[in-house]
Amino acid sequence: MKNNTSLETGHSLSQIAETLGQESSAPALQRGLAILELLANADGGVTLSEISSLLRLSPASIFRLTGVLEDAGYVQRCEQSKRFSLTHKLLLLGQPRKAGRGLVESCLPAMRDILAQTGETVQLCCLVDKDCVLIEQLASTHPFKYIVDLGSRPPIHCCAPGKALLAFLPVAERDRLLGSLELTPHTSRSITSIDAMRDELEKVHAAGYAVDRGEHFDGIHCVAAPVLDRHGSAVAAITIAGPSTRIQARRFSTFGEIMKQAAAAAAFRYLG
Image 1: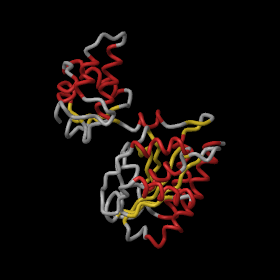
Image 2 (image 1 turned 180 degrees about the vertical axis):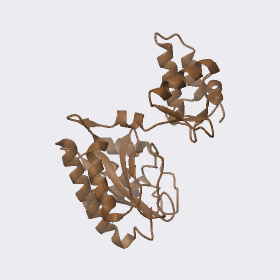
Image 3 (image 1 turned 180 degrees about the horizontal axis):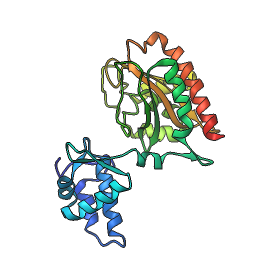
């Protein structure tokens, strides 16, 4: 990892390091948050010496801070590689809550029902800023399955849950997000123009579910439905993901109905 690596948050590593050098009324907290931000934007984890170098802090200070964060359950250290990474705990802290019920807790029964009906990997995603973030996952019952790390951020324009989230946002918010997206192609099927994306989102809104036709990864199909609040806006999306040989295009509508019913049940449980 290089010191000039750009973070997904828009802040460079050097800017974070400079901020740490400024006077603070809570320096330990500031350093701890900097470590969390660094880990959130580093693929594959970071070693203690790399954190020390990137944040320009002493190894002893990093050792103490990562120890506290590890004891509290926010970071974990791989025994083999000695690299630190974030745990699921931060995702759970950030999930929306209604009347004391967490989103993941509310959606899990519906996700288990989807898994029982389809046998495919079931994922729960939320919108964070302009990113689609995976916050829970139930693995497929098939030997060959599609699974990714919790906290993963699939490109919102190329994945079914991202489209479901976008299609059921308030119009002003959706337009703002669309205007800020870079529609980078990931396969030959990726949507790369705003007009095409608007047309796609209109179809998603009309159908009540979204599909990914191998737009993120060749050979992987997804079908997703939004978990809606009382105003009809998406608070999350539940999706299935698997090989196109099992989640076939001709069965999208069948899977879509399963996803819609499950997402409605999850919303009912979440909203009370």
